[in-house]
Length: 220
Length: 220
DNA sequence: TGATCAAAATTCGTATACTGATACCTTGGA
DNA sequence: TCCAAGGTATCAGTATACGAATTTTGATCA
Image (cartoon, rainbow over all chains, first blue to last red):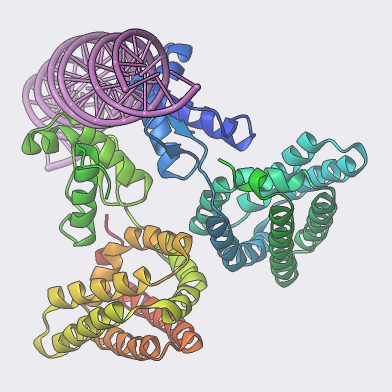
């Protein structure tokens, strides 16, 4: 693991909080405030926040850091990247996923299926994160994996918003189930094809929801 | 433009120097030394170098920053990314390039052609950079462009080494000429196809040269 | 009530200093 | 000549402080 200095620890802590949706669009992250809370000086906090900003997790404003404000165009551009990269990545993952990773994905998908009954969106989100992180962890091309992780981080809020929609909920879970099947059989071609469809479905869900309620998705 | 604070200025200065190949594999970049040379304190230098490191331009070691040590596997992974992204990017560029950009690319290719006679590798490198940066500047998908720029930065040294080879030199210039033609006609499909071939040829050149002289290419 | 401008507060950017860790060098021994 | 142990110099990480910029607040006046 990374050496446990303050900067790394704070960086990881806030990245987690962002990925878990614990940072709202109106929250302002100011180094001095965080430093006081954590009992450290400004510098490691400042460096952690600036790194998160340079990676797209945050946006530096004149007064603290906030979640990045995503325009519609930017989101569509990222969908283009997803169409280009994630099918290939899924194909690689199907070839090199381990049994441990298969178990983790099976469990995550089972959890996600459950939420179709319970309607527990938080659990659905958490299970989806585990599923995604696990199959991405099986992608043997490290550069490809990190590129995907980088831009996915930027659209976290959009994905979270999409998952709230019942229709999208069902479509996503169905996609996860079928992807799991392809992964289980080591079906690289099938995984690539299904992942392309998965991304296209996500794009359609986003477009449908953004027409219905544009402000909620593009706010920042 | 970005506000001209020390950190931004130093960041841009060193990114330029790296892209121009002015930083050697054995150079150690130490914040205190650079700070003394520039007459500023460590902090802005440190922050600039750390940002360059987080973007892949540099690698942080226990004793200063150096160019990233590229293993063969990592380079091959980046070639995979290039195959996936650059054809699509070239197609976009063919659709939306401006006349000014066409002129700049024409001039750059003409300069590159000249170097087939003169053998001036430095001029060839410079002209290739202009050609590449110009067509990338015409890519309307900002996220795609920045993703490409990010990983290309990491293999700068490999590209520089490849250009030294006479065979690669001719192949690259031929590719630039044909790409220029596709761009001129707004031929998106043709540009995409030719760019794919361009990347495949670059990969072959790399593989051929890495077999011939592995140490020179993978050293770091 | 609304506008304008100045004072205050907040926050960023940078400087400087200190500490702990680590690479490198020196010295001694086999 | 090679290796090992210990000392030294260097460098990363962090703390603290100060000035500059900008935003907010508040007060005065139309």
